[in-house]
Image (cartoon, rainbow, N blue to C red; front, side):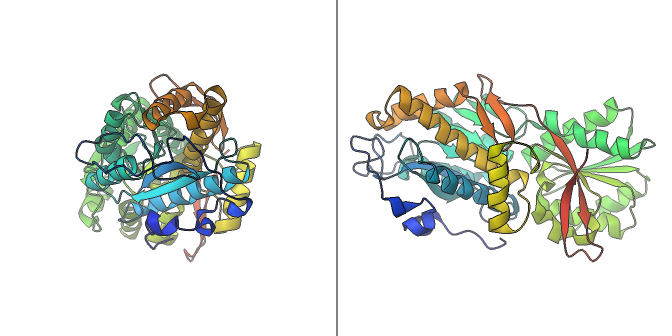
Length: 419
């Protein structure tokens, strides 16, 4: 999965690539907001379209990182979204009409996310968007969806104040303030004698800055001593200086807020320089794509989770089985959250269609009514039972902590969930 995923126009050109079960035939939607002529693209003004470009499926935008170092996370989201498309279309889609995922690459920066959202809204005429991958991108791209009145569901945006961006912004990723403290508490459970803590965070990433504030407050709340705070960039590869400065202060615990590539390299260099204590990784390290970066040095890293493959429930059992069959490994959190976001669009559309036939609504009205329905619904997902507050914040009750277990040669590893 290390290669960049091709863009939508190539992926969605045939029924075979769509994974929509097209052997049963396509279903047209006469008088539908997603049928008719193409309207000119207007990315300068973000003017909502009144007609769409697709006549046989309902377009849902997937705006996540398929290239750059952020692709280590975004590729897992693409995988989860595709499994959702295949599964829900096999169940009849939206009351007989299939969904069609439209992918746009946000890359790893704000400009990429802005361009992807503009294209999805104005050119692809999607009814809503799952994305972007990073909170840093969400603060720039989500306002575009808000101004166009297009529902946005963040699959992995856990920084503070994401739902507050606007009325059309929701997320299925629980806020860092709820999830992050669990891993520090798990570290204390493993070693009650912990006293000194060193914190590292990526200062150019909004999520990492938000997460480190929670981590640092948790350290204080647990009566631990914060001996140093070291900053880095998500594009950094050399952490010798920061790691050495921290190790000289003899910390018992290191906490890292960053992304998979930089975070994995930091873990590796800390171990190479002789650090032997516990390491807690933030949500940006919550991916099996971290394992090839730090290999055997990943062993023992603790990471709080908003998803467990072992969560009971029919939908998660199906999702886990499908993921393992397709990718030969357990599904990660980022895939489960992307699957969940697509599921919410499908189930909200199903409910809305029963109230007021969606093929009778013009696209702006459909987007508005869909947004309202999303927030009102309750959903049984791979993450468990979830819902939303009126502001779009996810309501979720089940959380976990996993510890990475690696083979001695670093060739293989897995996330082992703690009891």
